[in-house]
Length: 152
Image 1 (spheres, rainbow, N blue to C red):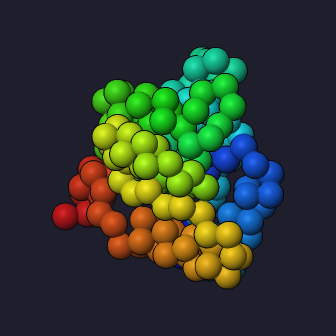
Image 2: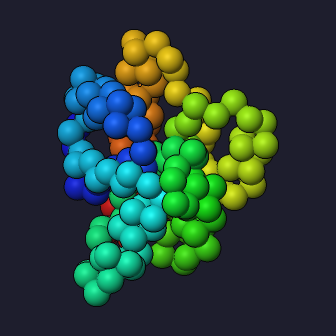
């Protein structure tokens, strides 16, 4: 399965990054993956600001896999900025985190997260979760991009 649009993985933990990339591969999800290692990198990528200033805006990702506990700008602030911009307001965002804080869960949904998934500790369960996420958001989910491309 491949999408022409990338997956944006926002993850600061190198082990979780490697596990996610491995799980995507094992689930035959071949969409390109752009990795942002903190909230600043994610915002700069999405909006061509900071170190990417003056560059052409990249294609919107098919889905953002967003960790919450990030350096420089946390995941909730990244989500807030995504929802505040007209271009990215409808972008699918899946919070993928280890946080068990009820306030994080509530705030993520208040800010417009499409889904909130706690990372399973067990690799087999993690791999299965990543497969389900990828197949749902890349194969089954209909987006405004589908309509814009004239698929209907």
